[in-house]
Length: 80
Image (cartoon, rainbow, N blue to C red; front, side, top):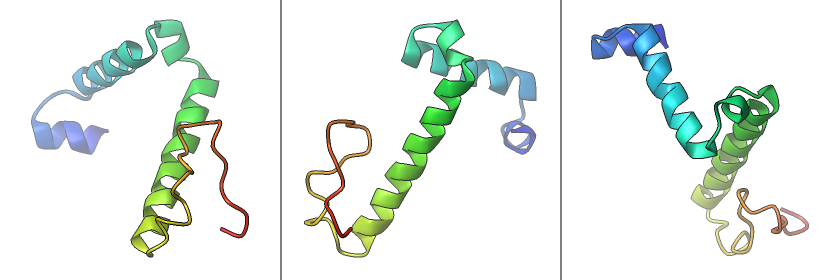
């Protein structure tokens, strides 16, 4: 985060506060925003979305048409 702050010409603390403010706005609570489980789940979601993007780039969008990692009700088709 320090490298990003340097590139922007701002202090790392300011960048951290902006990041925290954005997260709090997304989850509507500072307590939830700081919860380690929330951080872990957000990281897992990001990885799943990246994996889905990679599969799509390989030409598999039809096989994954009903799967979306942000929707817990969806499920990955068998064999994918």
